[in-house]
Amino acid sequence: MRIVLFSLVLLAGGCVIQAPREAIEPAPMREEAAPPPPVVSVYEEPPLSEPAPIAVGWAPPPMLVEVPPPTPFPYAVWVGGYWVWQGNWVWAHGHWMAPPRAQYVWVHPYYEHRGDAVIFINGHWSAPDVAFVPPAPGLVLVVEPAAAGVMPGPRAMGPEGCFVPAPPGSRRGIIVPAPMGTAPAVVTSAPPVVAVGMRVTNNITNIRNTNTTNVTNVTNVTNVTIVAPPAATANGRGFSSSVPAAPHLAAARPAVVQARAPEPVSKRPVAPYVSAHAAPVADAHLRPVVARESQPVHAGSAGSAQPEHRAQREERASPKAAAAGTPVARTPGAKTAAAKTAAAKTPAATTAAAKTAPAKTAPAHPDNGKAHKPDAKQDAHPEARP
Image 1: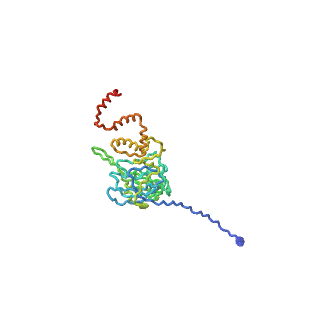
Image 2: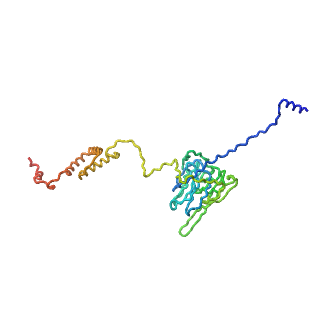
Image 3: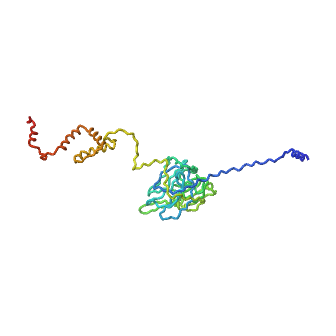
């Protein structure tokens, strides 16, 4: 009864008793990864020799799916189908191509994780009996600048050394260690990875040919093995598979994630990237122009001007022309140069010229050079003269 009366008093007073509410915390906001930038696909003209290595500040994106068409001719080579550097990582569109010269072979691109950068050597053609030279361990390279408007991607995540990009659909920045010379397309059919752990190993087949003259050892790499632990894959299951080492065969295998490579906007091939820090190559046909302060020179010296050389040539040619009876036209500059040259002659040269001039300019004798007898006698007895 007392409780009822107390409740009536509280209601009359306008007081309401409410049960305490449980505090509801908002659900944590899940950070969504930024969408990858749009892929740029280009036709790139492969170089005919090993290009110089460059350093890039972030890892190439995961591989894309690009199924090669049928081989157009027996000796065609599948070129492209991987990431190249053009101020940003762009997709080099795959296509069939004939070797540019006889016995030339194709060399796959080279990716190396070194420190905080990626060392990259583009795929290229190589002459026969020319071995690929990887970058020296002590080589120091300056990171290439990104093109205007390009946002840098994540740095390479994985052990240092040679690698290939991750399979299609993988987390950006993850790299897959692989032996040198591995085609990037071998991981096309592998499952995507979200952590470091996938690796590629070679299946080496040694063939020993022995005959009476020589012994030949042939090393063939026809397949590679891709292994990943459960913690590395996106589906949480371990992976181990053997895939063809040839890029056109590996790229033709069905992919787990269909991340298709776009078609290039232009069919016109682009030139390979040239390092922004590379020293300019001097052309053998061009000579550098060095600006120097003008200095006074003397006629006939090594640094004299061209008109003085021409005047000297005219002066040397004038006695011959005069002897032949040919008039010589001289310019005022030639006259001045001739006057300077005449003034610069030594006394010995003047005496020699004086002795030579009468012999050249003496008039012809009427007796064909025979002297008169009286004159000869006078010349023989000069003292008989009064």
